[in-house]
Image (cartoon, rainbow, N blue to C red; front, side):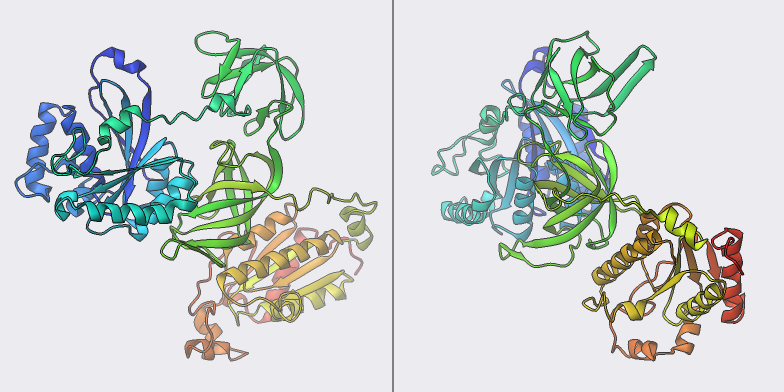
Length: 634
C-alpha cells in the first residue's frame, strides 16, 4: 500500500479531546471535488494557520485550477505529482473539530488505478461522503466506490451532489441523481443514505443553508456530521481477542497481548482458544495503567491465564458458548489490487488474525459488473475488479462474517513472488464441505514403501520451453534408472492432457490448474515410494514452488532445460512454433506468453551440456550423490 500522509490542524481548547470523534472518508469519481470539499471544511472552520493560508495562495497561483481564487484542493493534495496533475493519488488524512465534535477525514483518490488506496482509506471509516458531479451524474467509479464502501462495512452514506453551482442549482438534476443512486444502492445494505446538494467551491450547504437552493430543507453537511450516530455497539457482540504478541519479559511472566476486536473480557471468566479448543480462565487483565477487572472493545490489553496453555500469535480467544467458525475453506468478496490477474489454483499468502498462511482461490463464483449492475461468470479477476470467491487455506482459521466483525472477517492476499499486496478480502461465510472427511491413518507409510524399493522417493521436475529437450532427456533418465532396478513413473505434459487434464486449455488459469493437478498426482506417487519424473513446461514459478512445497524437503529436484528460444524454434519437433508465430496458436509459451525462469534450480542443463545422453548422465550423477538410489543393487 502507498504511505498515508497525516497533517494536523489545531482543534481548539484541550476539552475537545473528550468529544466523540467521527472517522469518515470522501470518495467518488475523479474530479468530483473531494479534496476541494475537505479544504472548504477546514477553511470555513478557521482551521488554516496564517502561514499555511499564505502558502496556499502562492500554490494556487502556481498549481491552481480556479483562476485567481484560492484552490482549496491544494490543502489536501500535497504531493508534487498530485498538484501538477490536479488529482489525488495517495490517501491523505486530515483532523479538524467543531464545537460539537472532532473529525478524522480520509481524502481518497478517485482514479480507477488508485482503487487500492481508496480501499485502504475506507477500511477504518465509520461513514463515507460519496461525491457526485452534478453535471455527470452517477458514473462507473461512483458505483465502484459505493460497492467497496458497502463491502468494507460502512453503513452510513452522505450522497453529496457537488458542483450544483455549475448546473444553476437545478432541483430536478439533484432529484434525478438521487433516484439513480437509490435504484443502484438497493442491494448495498446501507443503513442510511443522506443526500445533500452542495458546492464545495462556493460553500453552498457546507456550514450554512444556501440561498441559492431554497428548495432544500435538510441539514447542512457540517450539521449532519456533528449529529450522526454511527456507534456499532462493538462491546455487545461476541468476544473476539486475536493474540498479536506473546509477552515474555522474564520467566515469571507470560502474557498474551492484543486488541479486543469485539465484546468484553472479565477477570476470572473462562475463555477458549478457538482453533484448539483449549480452555482456561483469565487471571489478570494487564494494562499500562494497572490491572483491570473488565475490558471491552477496542481496548488494548495483555491477558495472563490461570493455566499453561498452548496459544500464540494468530490464535483467537473467545467465550466457550460464542465461538467463531474454525474452517479451512470459506467464501469471501475480494477486491483485486495487483496488476497481475488473479489465478485460481495459484498459491498466495493470506494474512489473517495476525498470522500468515498459504491460501488458494479455488473458485471464482462471479465478478461484479458496476455498469450493468449484474454478476458475471469469470475465470479470473483483473486489477480493481471485485468478485465472490471460494478460498482454501493451509491451516484452519477462526473466522466471522465481515458484516459481523471487521477484524476476524478481513484478510489480505500477498503475492508469494513479489511480496506485494494482491487483494483485500471480506469473508461472507464458512464452507463446510469437508467437515465429515478426515485423513485415514495408514498401516504402511511412505518410508516403508521406499525401504522395500531401496530408494528415496523423489520428484524430478523437468521444466523449460517447448522443444528444450525435457521429454527426450526424461525418457533417457528413466530408462537408465530402470536399468538400475529403480521404481519410477514418468508424467509427461502431452500424455497427461490426453486424460486427467483433457478438459484444460492453455490460458494462464488453465496452466495453473494443470500443474496443481499434476503436483497432487506426483505427491501420491512419492507417497508410493516412487521416483517421479515430471516433464512439463510449467511456465510459472509460483506453481513450481507449490509442487515443491507439497513434498518433504529434498524430495523435489528442479531440472531447468535452459535452451535458448531460437534453438527451440529451430528444432520445433511438433511444428508448434511455426503455427504460434503465424498467430494460429494463442497463449504459446515463449511467443505470446512469458516463461518465468527458475531462480535456484538444483540442476541446469544448458546448451554446453552436450547431447541428451550427457545431460542424462549429469542428472544421474546428481541423484547418486544425493543417495536417491544409492542402495539399489546394480
